[in-house]
Length: 269
Image (cartoon, rainbow, N blue to C red; front, side, top):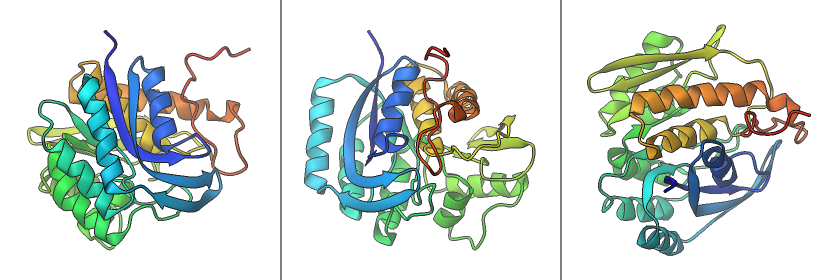
């Protein structure tokens, strides 16, 4: 039986991030993807033009439909958008036992457009993070969640912020350093029993649309397949590095193009 992963996120009309990016990642990694849409966005590689949040009751209905029928082995949460949506997701997931949850605390799009309001941020801190087996903030999101004035400037700062975020209640924190400096892209995974440094060569490309969504959904795919958390993070980082390296082959859009989710599968001819 094929493992099933669920993505709870917003829809990206340009197809590179959000629900669409997550489902592509699941498929590329051999996992069947189900989805619960929290918001519709009118966006492309250049920016977000409009957001239409879905009612919490309808989000809850989608969750009920999925869990009543499908044997979900892992859940990835991306953009929730509003406080009511965040509450609806938290109330449903708190009754879910034994299924790993990966939370990507999406607050700002690659283009810089805000995707989460202040009220929803607070609900996310108080209700969704404590339910999560892993949260995957980037440098800006980690600082924002903690209320820090600046993002971490080095690995020691990343470890410190990850350790402080761990106190919010998640089982593990992965602070992503892809937007940092240096020849390597370094992520720091902090769990109660230790710290793991994950690295990959830094790839110079403007095609970074959907990187955060792709990494977190790749981790969820690994967990759905039965991998341990650290192993799932390592394999997800390697997958994202390949998707970034091949992103230029797609030539999609006029702005920050998407990563190549199917870089290992599509015919190169």
